Image (tube, rainbow, N blue to C red; front, side, top):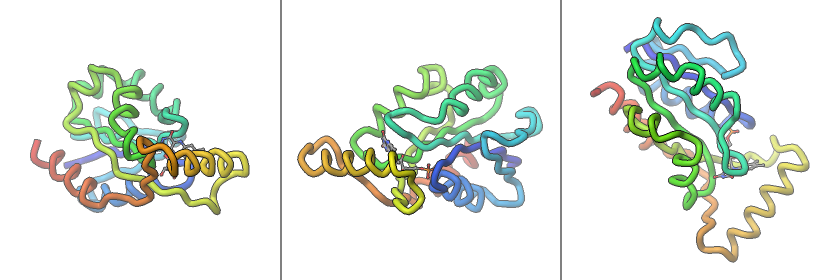
Length: 164
Ligand SMILES: Cc1cc2nc3c(=O)[nH]c(=O)nc-3n(C[C@H](O)[C@H](O)[C@H](O)COP(=O)(O)O)c2cc1C
């Protein structure tokens, strides 16, 4: 299944998940592109996957813009969407907030691949934000900070795309 995977990643976690997904689908048939790269035509592929990190509740605006711009082509192709993020309780909210209903209805699969917080890769201001999120999580039960990639979700995602 010739697959195009487009992703955006600030600290490398979404990139790592995109590469794991490509390995699951079959790396030979997958082309991986960072959103700022020279992305090929959707019509050259049987399947398209778009993935982004979430920061302050939102996915990368370049990914949102790509989805809007290529909506019609995507809706004629099999496609899946994934996010990488660390607030386990906010995953559903992040998905419904960032992907419009028509995307939710038409995607073969939309899922969360978990996330990580590689503190050594964060800018000082981002470290402050992360520290305050972790602090809130200690007292607010609706803020669970989850710091792991979920390989089973990636395998399942690839299986759903292969089966559909
Ligand atoms: C400044 C900052 C803000 C973040 N905001 C959120 C958020 O609103 N919700 C969430 O679930 N995760 C949030 N995260 C966690 C990231 O989504 C997580 O670290 C993800 O794995 C990053 O992927 P990347 O390495 O591809 O950029 C935030 C992380 C940082 C550094």
